[in-house]
Image (cartoon, rainbow, N blue to C red; front, side):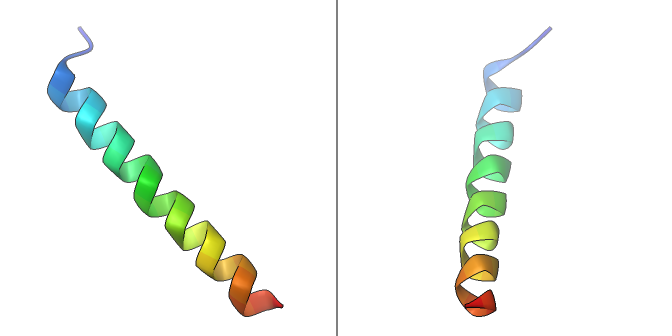
Length: 29
């Protein structure tokens, strides 16, 4: 079962990894 809590954790994880990816790209410039 895909609960709301799992979705919130997954969305939070996606946001963190996305920010990390953006910072990584910026530091590579």
